[in-house]
Length: 302
Image 1 (cartoon, rainbow, N blue to C red):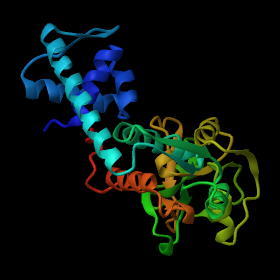
Image 2: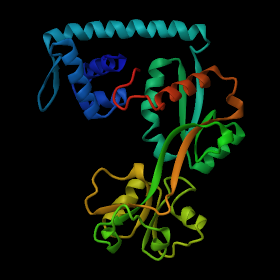
Image 3: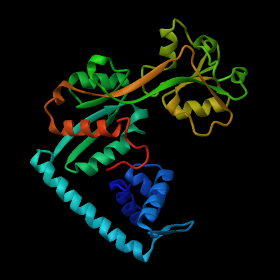
Image 4: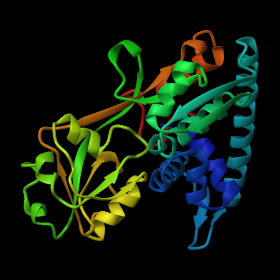
């Protein structure tokens, strides 16, 4: 079934003449965009675009379809502006803090779709460590913050969960282990180690210390998960990284789950100062819908 995401993608593709740039504009993957366009054309029973190696061009019938799509989206924006005015959401400013791995991956598509829904509300995203985000929340310096492993009493909106993995060079002796067996942190204690923090206090070192261990041969400390993966690929040492940060290209790498299993979750938390903000209420509800179990991983209603 077609939804607003399809029509926004249609217009973005016509504007950019490029599926990759259109996908980036609406906040989905290139493969998801290609599938969505194919689905839209199949549903309409006509070809909207012609594709070549260099660009995507609009067909004659496609031009008429896109004109109607632009008009429809424009009318929708007018209706939403009217609704926002009636609810006091025609303007506002939200300060949102997060650690790097979330602010660069999960938040951009969320904030893009929120901006389309509520164009009068400005969202300022601030990047910091997880400890800095906690400090900003406690001082009321931000309205919303993404925190690591939030306690139940904080009523966090969970954005994601994943498990911690040991990342090893492909030639490492431990790489021969079956993935079902996993690897204990104690096995890594004396190995050359790449410490990746992701801008968070919860990382390989803190996990080891929580288990009563020390990492005795830390060769490099980096903030970025991708940098850690690249150094492991070069054979400089092992690392412990979240499963969601593993590279798509695992050549010369081997990932094994930690045993006993170690997991992390991150969620959105409101500051006390934001409890009466209609704008923050709107973003909270928007995020709850976007990260609900039923939310589509491809094209969502924008």
